[in-house]
Length: 343
Image (cartoon, rainbow, N blue to C red; front, side):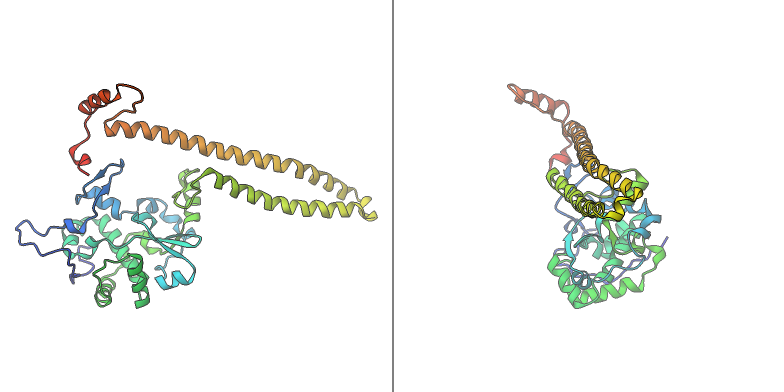
């Protein structure tokens, strides 16, 4: 396991003052204001495996690593100015599994966390964990490709991808150090690839992992059912437009004496006429059935999540009189931990 640091120069940070304590440096200023756990509790961030795993690991992409060639090329991401020139808008995400994922005219990028620019933090909490270190190294390496020129640096600062105190000269030194110590064998295989197309990731997850409805991520899916219906029926309308053209051509053909005696053309016209009558009805019913399945699935998942969530919160859903008394009794019998209530 590679235990060397990806960089050694300390990035000046006015938010962090050198600690004179014998217990070592205080990394609290480098952490977010709050943290959402896997069970959707909002807690005070504490440096540990759970927190760093949520911040850095890309397990969902590693699960389909051998299919990533379908979603993108094994090359570093193109710089920010190139992304803008392709009419891609930069969207901020704090989810590492959406970093460098693109869809239509947008690309999702995770800003560089303050703690990844502190070599002491690396030495204390990252470098000895092979999985974390590989993801962290790959993440920083992706930024050496994203920010190559001053134009890229200005775009990164405007979008909040870099800490405000970072300067261009400091970034050049940091980038040089990262590239000098770079080795593809020491970074997570996800970062062998740069930009990944979300639509293909969704297809890969549906076919390989069985996530038929959800796919890889619903970040670009329809937020309301009305939009889903409108999009599907607009596609159906486009197909029906072609059907109308074919039917019109056949009608003209039936008026030609030569084709009137052609039995094959007569049979084809008959079959396509029946098809054009039944196909829209079947397709419309199929669309409504698919939306019904999605609605029922979402309803069941939401209902199940609601029950589990209230149990973890230590409360019950109350309606009617006397619920305050019952709620107080429930809180005494099933209190939420002090850490989870503190934020």
